[in-house]
Image (tube, rainbow, N blue to C red; front, top):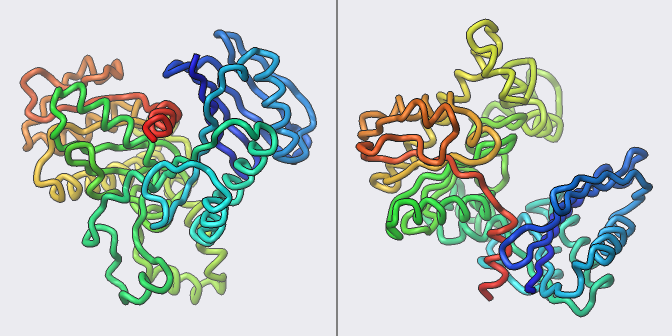
Length: 383
């Protein structure tokens, strides 16, 4: 067997998954680390299990994960540990083997991802202590977009901001975009196809890819730019910050927190960040209609601009919770872009089928469930 353990360490949670070759055999979540209601959820051989226990810190949580994997006989053939790393800056443009030097370089990038990189780094250090003989890999969310050209990643601000402070567009959701774009190329049987990938969940981003290579993406230096999201605003006029500071007396830090946690669908609807009830009540609730209207308008604009960047499109792919389960979103985009020769298959779209367009459609629309962890395994095995 060729087993891989994928670790996604967050500030108060750790997701983990074991693969035998490319088949997931166990998945789990250490939840509420450092809180009173901490627990570990596991799915193994089709059965679910929940263990309520104290998890005061990441070290205790990962010790328990290793213990569980040992009990289930999954450590004997473990060949690699693969860590999700959110921000690789300009330093890491591909998957890398975890070394002391890599960790030092990642620590330098903490200002670019202060909420995520510290937890990612801690996970790497702890697994090195727990399983020192197993090689570790880091897969960076930003790496897939490192192929963007300067004209795509630079902001129209003083160039010194980029040279001295690293202010540029990096992009995120790299493993998700890479996976579904690769699957779309297989479906089209055309490795040189132009693909628009839409990862639509509570966080959301659009990626334009040519021949499987990222050309542009909607997220920027941080995950706040681009598509309107569950609680994030997406792209807004930066002048709004100064205006609201003057109008309310609030600090920049406070308003940035509002843009990250109180905006998007939640802010516009004044109801929820969950798209499902908003979609269900669009016809009867003015607040739901308002939020979905803004969301669809802004998503359409971004998809259209990315198509223009590519100079055409062969397929538009939808993934993520909303992307995979919202016929309304896909139908809206298909209708707005029907001038490109898109013919929606309503029955297939309503069923969330993989292909949502007719055989005669000049541009295909695909619904492809993402598998970021599998893509991470593939990336690690490639080096």
